[in-house]
Image (cartoon, rainbow, N blue to C red; front, side, top):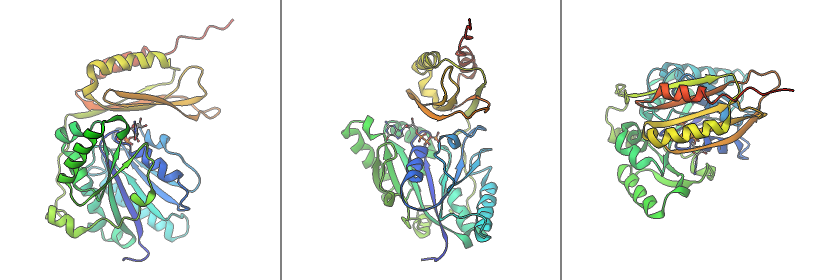
Length: 331
Ligand SMILES: Nc1nc2c(ncn2[C@@H]2O[C@H](COP(=O)(O)OP(=O)(O)OP(=O)(O)O)[C@@H](O)[C@H]2O)c(=O)[nH]1
């Protein structure tokens, strides 16, 4: 096996499948390794970045201006090159790289990077493509989005998430379907990212020969299409918001527009709350959690990204603006 190369894991999976949750588990686990993370997000606002636990040992690089598999692939090559150069010069220490792709990425062009770019190949070894599959939404996603199918097809390991929300018979049906789509990849379950790290790291799973059998044009084919009708926008607001109003409003919106709302997530500045509130959902499943405290003097801004098809953008922006907390009366 190629000695001295830096192992790279590509973490992929459709929108909201649990990538950031799993990545947080990897970062928090007691493995003694330093991990450089490359985060690619759909939409201009880097929210995942804020959701990752961070300590001095980690290097987190954001790539926000497009999808890693097409427009920003050049950026990926550049970032990997810079990381390797800094590591070689002793300016940066890390043992492995994890790339979290957007939920809409086709993993093939990301994987290609490690074979077609000579410089990258000299420093890095693609360890595996780990694909997360959301047990609640995958049956529809696999039917409607070819990206979801590509992610399963290219997986070296499949991690099934949210099995806590689905009856066992449906899980077995989904597993059988995934096995038919990709007999190479073993399937593991992870509840809220809890997984034995051996299941996702150092798999030495990426096998170019196997991939070339499935997709003979793998190394040359860079053309691929995205769902063009999927779009995103960001809501921003510096005035404090009222959490109950937001929950009521979005709760009502998903009743009507749930199927269009593929993914929404944000950091909210809530009246009277010293911590960031992390609010997120996938279609009709939504929830809020308390995040890290706002720092003294920091501008508290709510930012929420919506990704979906035919989004009711004006309605959402208007409803969220009306969720600003009423001014506090001081006596
Ligand atoms: N019930 C349940 N919820 C989960 C599980 N894993 C993740 N989630 C929730 O699913 C939501 C999405 O998780 P993320 O980790 O942000 O998903 P992601 O794939 O990073 O999302 P994008 O980057 O936006 O595509 C969050 O609310 C998680 O708490 C699980 O095993 N069970």
